[in-house]
Amino acid sequence: MKHRSVAIFTALSCALLLGGCSASASDDSGSGSDGIRIGYAAMTTKEEFTSTIINTLEDEAPAFGASVTALDSRMDTSFELSNIEDLITQQVDAIIMQPIDGKASQSAAKRVTEAGIPLFIISTEFAEGASVEYASHIGVDDTDAGRLQGEYLNERLPDGGNVVLIAGTNGASWTDRRVSGFEDAINPNITVVAEFQGNGNRDEAKRGMEDALQRYSEPGSIDAVVANNDEMAVGAALAIAEVGRTAEFAAIVGVDGTAAALDLISDGKMTATVKQDPRAQAEEALSVITAFVAGDTVDERYALPFTLITSENVDDE
Image 1 (cartoon, rainbow, N blue to C red):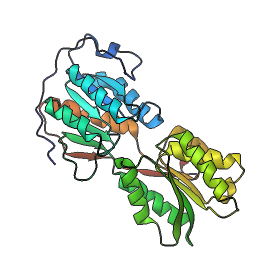
Image 2 (cartoon, rainbow, N blue to C red; image 1 turned 180 degrees about the vertical axis):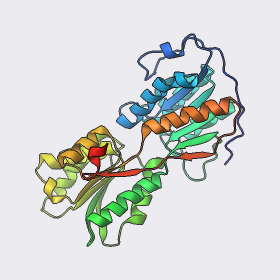
Image 3 (spheres, rainbow, N blue to C red; image 1 turned 45 degrees about the vertical axis):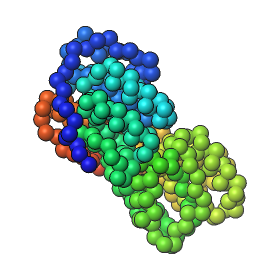
Image 4 (cartoon, rainbow, N blue to C red; image 1 turned 120 degrees about the horizontal axis):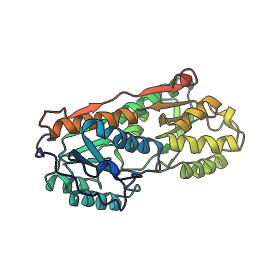
């Protein structure tokens, strides 16, 4: 895959940004500035992780001589494509994508490169073998998140056990990689007895977990829950707590390190999360993009580490 083939653009003078789907509370940071104009097609604004990326990009951009327009794709690839076309029309100097679907999101990405605008990918990724050209990827290796969950589960269930797996969105890179990393890491005595898709959503995961608890109503029939993100882990943990079965679970673990998950770990209603740092990703993205637009060479990938958070270190967060 090529990462440096799109053209380098100098900053364009800023016009008043049209904020039809904008996630920003205000467009003041982009008005009247001659700085680098960055567009961000965010996966969603309803998750704490992505909201933190948006807020950090908008707050820190002026220090990099830039401004950011963030648009909410609402976990829908049709909105994602519309947002990309909007940003292209605005003639921004660079576009950040957080791909919703590893395959379907490629159409929107190709519109960016066809328009000659540098494309940067944050957090999520495209499917393996995707034919998308972009300048750099800033994020994490989601396979590592699943691996850390699997290794943690091996410690909590050394003799094996029954697990409910809550997947994110099938086909999305973060889902596929986290599931793959988890399945490769768990010991042979751990069995996934139920799996459902929660689409990264707390309410969907809570409903799915309520159904699983009814199907596996006998104490000890489920030993752990593994979710592809914290929103879904929180939904599952709340469903479990509401029926008074928290003590039955050796592990309830998510990914992201959101405030809601950390609170539940402190309260004993979740056991762990695999934290990634959205602020660091956003700050790194600003550094990489502004360097690229200035004509500097940037790396193909910037992978930030994950950290396992449990009751033992949650107070350090």
